[in-house]
Image (cartoon, rainbow, N blue to C red; front, side):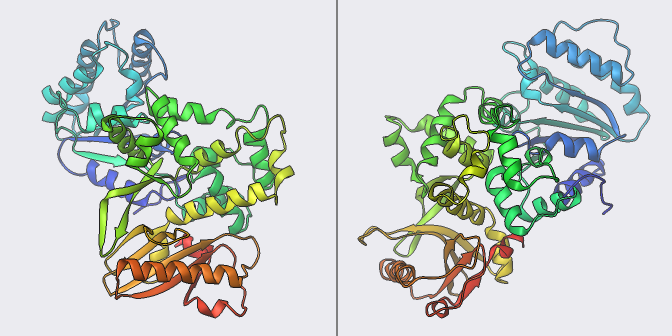
Length: 478
């Protein structure tokens, strides 16, 4: 496959897009994902010079502003429009008439509607008009490739992907775009002139989570510490107010979502649905279930199974915040005050060291597939889950267990340090205690491999040989 200039990673998505364009049938593709992840950039770069029509909704615009954006786009693509449409139904009629000669001429007719949740202003009837456009005309032409895109995950799922109206079962493909992996983040930084160590790359991931736009703001002439202060802690930092914008873009009513996210941020091990209901003082979990699913869909939260005795259960699953930027913001937003060089002034303090340890755990949990590949078990069927003791005192918990079909279980312990990690006698005993508690309570007869994932290499000492499997942060790069 030909490499697309300026695009890092996204090989799977590029291959899928090209396959859809060559399919020989009408395609209706819905693309969604968190704000700033690179959805629009990917589509514009991939189809540069091949678009038949493209328009972008005006964020927080009213109906008149959205129609004005439509008119501007029609003019930009050379379509003469002699009237200003009073409704979206009429706007799509005008678009159909403009596209018809292009469709009749053969060749691909690629139509891209970006930020479509913004186009659906109150009472505008946009979703119905879009459905009519597709059902009555576009779906009848094999060379029509309609791509719709939006950051408002709840709107995209409810009104497009899982629509019960005119677009019910009309989407031919859906694509959720996720942040870069660590390897993709490293490649992005290299391509843009950064000469950072892998430790700095991992630390940047702890703050920015592989979100393409955040990475684009980094200055290769500065250290990571200087970049963090400039982007976030400076009074005019471009990311200082990003948290509110993020949730306002993702959800039309963001308050319930930020309440959940901020509660999960205070519980590093995560919470069950029942625990969330109790702490949020909710009598009914109906809305909570939907909100959690929406947070999972946009990559903010992960849901993972737990093991009890010999059974891995979905019921009682734990929800955990994994959006790295949100974790960073919630932890430090109220602590920095007016200190524009907060990060430089607090490096190495217990507060930042504790947070870095927590963030490293999250980064590892986001790269389980890379860990399995490094262990050469990616071709072996496996499932991963968490385990929380119901019997031991103090309570034992293991955040990552990889249960393999070859009768082996990797029981993973995650430790962060910038220098060689020295395993103390106390920590070695705690690991052994958790391992034995897991063996006893689950009744497993599988082989248990204690697997230590450190940032820096493990120092050799009297306890290091007790660890049969040792990985460093390099494993997270795949």
